[in-house]
Image (tube, rainbow, N blue to C red):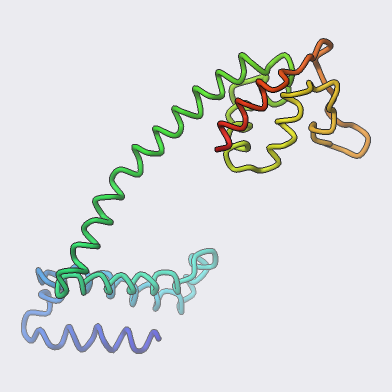
Length: 193
């Protein structure tokens, strides 16, 4: 593969005639040519004694970047161009959606801390644990344990606490854990939906 990429770059540079710099500065293909040339240079560096640089980062991943050239087809096909433009414009709002989800999870975690802290000090004793527990409920990852503790209290359902070692487990820290009953079921079920 290295020989083919090298030959391709060499032929394109020679095809520029007396102005080989056009290979890099061409308005239409210049940036793609720079990427190709960079991949060729890095491929040769992998064959030198400096190959220790690439032990943790294989050059094959850089060669996969050449597949991005498929997006150049969007220029020739108008329908594909509109789809690609819609995808790119949609990616700009992903960051705002992540911020919105984070703020929602923070508000829910604070609310759950106020409601369930006495029943379940392990899962809702701090903001960090509450945020993690909210994420656990949203992804449905063993959320039933948090649900049972919220409903019955940690002293009546101790099985929801993790075992750190075989003999040392985390126990219910609350002496008066009453549980929230169906209120806990309602809150956690709504969040899970």
